[in-house]
Length: 177
Image (tube, rainbow, N blue to C red; front, side, top):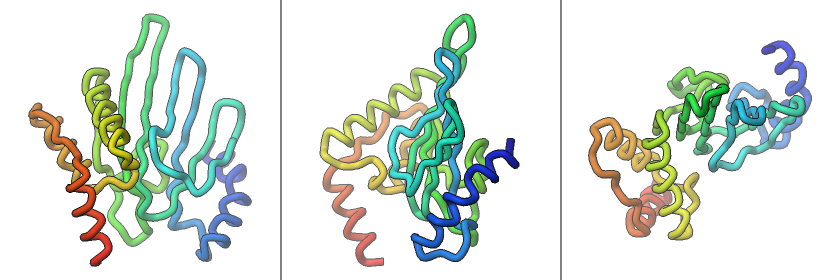
């Protein structure tokens, strides 16, 4: 499958690297997505891929530039119902950054938030909805907030609210650096 994936994405990715001002595709993050009705759904909840490559009827690859923040959700079922809910908020990195190896994300990414199980994933999705209700794109949210949310989930504490003031402070700090 990796050889098939490499051959199918090599030409589109090389043109993307040239248009992005890069000489190679080494700094791109590839995220595999899939959909098989009533069985599996790997999809992006938020994040803007630089390009999406369709491999076949069921599979796609989303390509992210370094620094992009995105969320991938995995839903899986069998004949008896849902067996897996998983949500990951990740940040694409450069080849010089330390990354975590994550299945279906090549070469890896910085994992900001990981939620497993239906109740936990639904709680995080509620946070996404609250952020979007304020007119803030979840991909633009401070990475520190996603880490804080992950720590609160792990400790089973109330989840923090992302406010417009917190977002303005994040944007001001980002502009200074």
